[in-house]
Image (tube, rainbow, N blue to C red; front, top):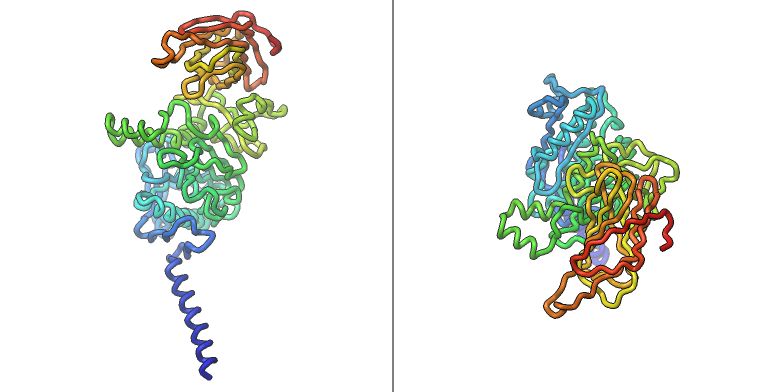
Length: 480
């Protein structure tokens, strides 16, 4: 009997140990269910905090002139208390990300733009108690917040007769994954928009732990800070997560944002304090918010182009939309049938939208790599264009090289008549006195919306430091 007893004892011990491990790796809450950190939910090493601690709040706006929101809760719906919620209208639910709360300016501004666009309910989600440090814990808490949203929507469906298809969830950074978790519990949810979905703890993990196109009938995402994560940049993911994924300016390093480096961060902290430092760190990551908000009522085009990667886009290989309307980024993306990855260029400040032009600068033959900058603008029948500046500071200009930049103009350029160039050479102490210069072979400008190009031949134009030159003879073929 002893061997049998020992064997049974070992089985009992294993069962108890497994149960204890499951208890340590799982947290269960009334109304919301259970949360585990067993695979695939092992993207963090911590369980979500309790719903009572996170204390998710919902603030309802229903009118553009409303000065303050009303609080909406499941208890309100289950009691006789009246709410301003209008069940016959569509509903937008907006979630913030790390270190924020539901009262930040951008959320209120987005709500007002939504209400200006059309009558609808707009709900701001405040999970500020759970969005703070450490980041791993905030990541885990997104699951509880997503479950809270799902419970609220289900209650609105049950009590007021709405349906999942009426809801559009919008989330920035961690908030994008909050929306994903909510959508996974709401079959047939109408739409989710991810604004630069957070990368750390999500990229390269199972689809179940991040926003993906299975979370709603239509999922779109705007990627603006998708470089490799290095503590001061790369907060957003480059990975496509939706039916339509938009990559403004390649999806990282947005124009108008300071270059993110440890030295710049330290200098800004010393000179201007923590607030401005935060603006540097979050500039590209937050740009997705401002692009989407502007798109809601923008009078100018936010046209994008389906493309496999930024290299093809910058080579001018993707400007043809096949005779169909080119999709608009942001609010109106749902109107288009195209699916995949889409690229566009934006301006560096508000308004960010505009008419896009690809400017290509081809150098001729010259002896030595040359450091400096070359500024280029175009004289048109409607005046001068904005300038584009080709930089040869980090990577020098060299013989036979081609450089590409996007020019985004608020107004469509008139008839392009001349290319104006200004070259400035960056000399070191050891090269002082040498005047290497560059040779310009050709300047090309292509309108993205028509895919038509104008060429200016340089005829071996040599430029030395501080030279100005104009290319007057335009042509419509690339032969120089």
